[in-house]
Each structure stands twice: as structure tokens, then as C-alpha cells.
Image (cartoon, rainbow, N blue to C red):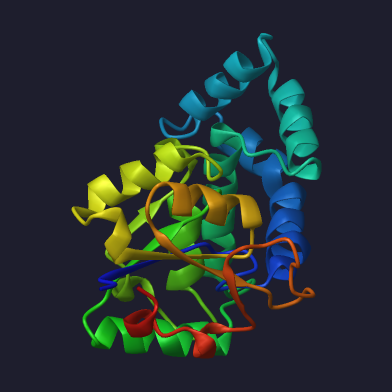
Length: 228
């Protein structure tokens, strides 16, 4: 019996294009001004020090900005970068510069599953703050009340079964009562190794002939009650 759904974001609840064509360019365009304006802020300063530690160099502010832009361009999953991006995106969401993209089928099914008593969780490489902003300022309105918890790479690598075991432990549910949704084969493999049920989203791509997970086009084809 499935009692919880754990979902990825990019390519699953939301378009990959939104992240790469809206969020990343917005952060890149605003990172320099943000760092210079907030370098002494008690929430920002430790993140700038973390950039220095990550590079092993005593970077100036200009050096930090150059490094952050390079990481954005390379789509690096580095914790201080993700945290700073989240702060920049928060300002953009609050100003109404954009809204978080969520597929209509995903929003509808998440609401239906929540109403049916399923616990809903998010696991994304984006920071927890970025996840909450996307769902809080989504095209479909504020969806944050639907979720019981959010997890990012601080709990583990998304392709490591240990991360999914840790998430199961954090939810208080056995792994076999959790359904994980993603568009990435290796993430689904890791979740299944940890004992979770899995479903692969193939929204904007051809079905993956090498995948051994059930594949669906959208959330309307997913019925947690019949998955286990």
C-alpha cells in the first residue's frame, strides 16, 4: 500500500525549460548585484566563505562572482550556489518577475492525492528554499500546503540509494510504502534499490527503451493505489 509520493521537480512536476530558460538566466543576470549589495548580510556572508572553501582560494568579491557565474553556466550542484540562487529567485518571485512552472496535470493530481490522504514530499537537487518558492509562487497558486516535507542534496546524492533510505527514515514510513516519481533513470534505480516503488515521467522525450521502470507521459496516468 502506497502511503506517500516523493517527487522530483525538473521534468516531473515542472518543465526543464523553466529552470534553464527562466531561473538560471535570472540568477546569472542578478548574481553580481546581489553579492555586492549583500556581502555583509549574516545569511549571505557564510555562503560567500563557503564558495572560497569550495575553490580553495581566498577570492575577492569579484572572484566569487566570476566563480558563481561559471558554476551557473556549468549547472553545478554546489550548496552555496544553490542557496544564493534561492535568495535571488525569492526576490524575483516576490516582485512578480515570473511564476513557478507546474504542469496542470501535476497540480491537479497533487491536490487530489493530498485530499485522499497521501503524504507528499519533494526531492530535488535545487535547494529546499528554491523548491518552496517554485511551489509557493506557482502558476497554479500556492501549493506548499500540500507537501509534508522537502529534501535537497544535503540529505544525499539523488543517484545514491542511501539518500532514499534517509528520506524514508525522515518520513517515518517504510520505503516500500513510498512511490518515487522522476524523469531520470539513475535516480529511479537508486530509489528502487532503497526499496521504494518507482514511476518514470517521459513528458518531453521518447520512452527510454533501457529503463526498467513503468513510464508515463503525465500524472493522470499515475494511480498510487494500484502501484504497490
